[in-house]
Length: 434
Ligand code: ADP
Image 1: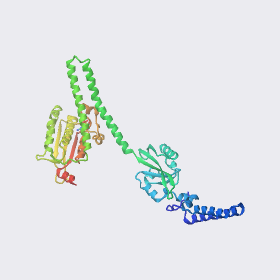
Image 2: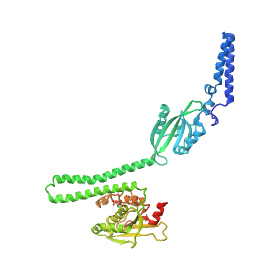
Image 3: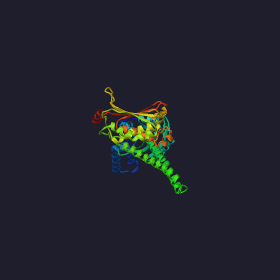
Image 4: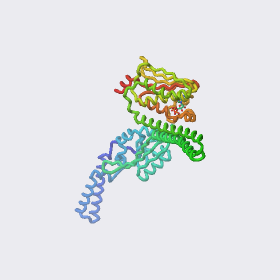
């Protein structure tokens, strides 16, 4: 393809004047011949000459009536540096094609997506996915925008969306140039969020359906075979109560989780003394501890320990961690609960609430996933213990809101330690003011 200077919109002036001169000379010769041999009168010939000369000398006519290949290329707005810079600066992968599908410009992101792209070559040679080819062909044929979704497998699986937009770029002299803009959008993060949402809904409905099925099964039994059996009725009502409690707990946990997520960006500011909160939770869990025959050893500072926090959420953190220790670490026979203030040379300045149990511990491969929603090491065991699989996820979200963190340490077979770290009050308020 011949290429003129990208800045030249038209053929140079001398060329255009030369063409006009050729037209005028040819017209003059033709008219002279017509006067001499054809019987045309001089005034008629003069009139015709004036009309043709006027038309030949109008600049747009000079440009458009006798187009050369240079004119055609030079007049293409799509080839100007401005358009090249626009395509180059687009945040997503972008390729600009001419009406036949030849590449005019593409940016770095597009070059990475399709390394075979070459300027002035057909894009179809470089973009091999059938969905892309179909969308491009359709856009060229119909001049209508097209969308296509496809999976790019190299170097890793990515869900991509292609938008093909036919464009009509105006030329300086009132004409237009038709070209095609292809933009590629990486939909992978959205897709992952969508998958997580679908998993979450599936898990939540599964968790609710199980106790619901048990409840309706027992209602049928109580209305039928066990109607006149007081002993069976008593037992079944007990089971129904447990299942109803489980459902209520699951709904509570789901609501708490969504509340904490909604307020994740709002850091609590009220200063709270956590010592009485820990005591309150331990008192509430004493019945569970004695039922599981677990001794709770407590180590709390004598003076108040202040953190900037939300009382209800802090209670949920302490309750979840101690309860887990009592439920899953019961075989160890004891659970240590401690609260420590930051030591003077502690750069992080954290208040640490730790729960250590001496039960079976957690295999290392499960540790990174424990705070995912509905993740359990042993789902049967968790359900049998009345667990929802949401406790640690809730703890993690509450700690994120408090700008804290959760540490989980476990040596399989030797118990586990869960530590909730909070910025101490001074550090917390200083951070809040920033
Ligand atoms: P759940 O409602 O099932 O207790 P959590 O989110 O609180 O849900 O805990 C997730 C899983 O982590 C539990 O099902 C259990 O398998 C494991 N886990 C939590 N705490 C302990 C612990 N102290 N010792 C052993 N495993 C634990």
